[in-house]
Image (tube, rainbow, N blue to C red; front, side):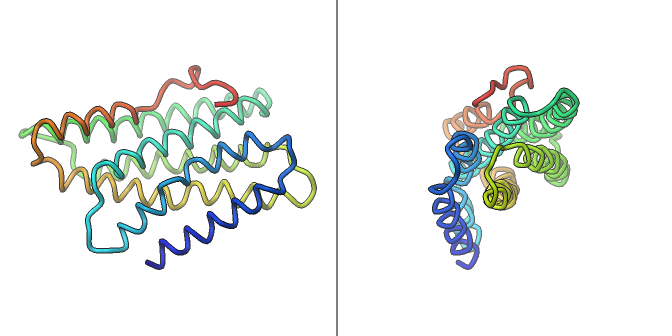
Length: 209
C-alpha cells in the first residue's frame, strides 16, 4: 500500500504543477505525464498478494513504449543534429532489447520446447529501460521552460520512468510464470496486446507524438 500512496501523491503533485507550466511546454509535459496513467494500479497490485493480471502486464509494456517514443519525439523537435544522432543510436539499442523481451514472451506463451529464460528477458528490459531513462533525461532538459519550472519538468520525467520500469518488470514475470498454462484464446489475446507493445522504427516516430 505504501507504494500505491507514494505514486498517488506524486501524481497529484505533477497535476498541480502542470496547471502552472508555461503554455509552450504544455504539449511536451502532457506527453510525459501520460505514461503515469495506470502505473499506480500496477504498483498497488504488486504490493499485495494478488498476482498482476495480463491486462496490466501488457499495458505496462505499451506504456514503456509510449514513454520512449514521447521522449524521442521531444529530442526530434528540440535537439541539435548530434543529439538526434545519439538518440537514434540509443533508441535503436533500446528497441532491439525491448522487442526481444516481447518476442521472448510470445514464444514462452505457446512453446513447450526451448524458450528464453526469465533472467535473460529481465536483463533485456534493464538494458532497454536504461536507454529510455537516458533519452528522457536528455528530452526533459530540452523542453522550454521559464525560470522556476525546470525542476517541475525534471520531476515529471523522473516520475514517468522509475515506477513504470518496476511495473514492467513485475509484468514480465507475471506473464512468464502465470499465463503459459492459460487457454489458447486467452493466450491469443495476450499475444495481440504484446504485438501492440512492440517498438516501431526511429524514423516512424513523429514530432508531437
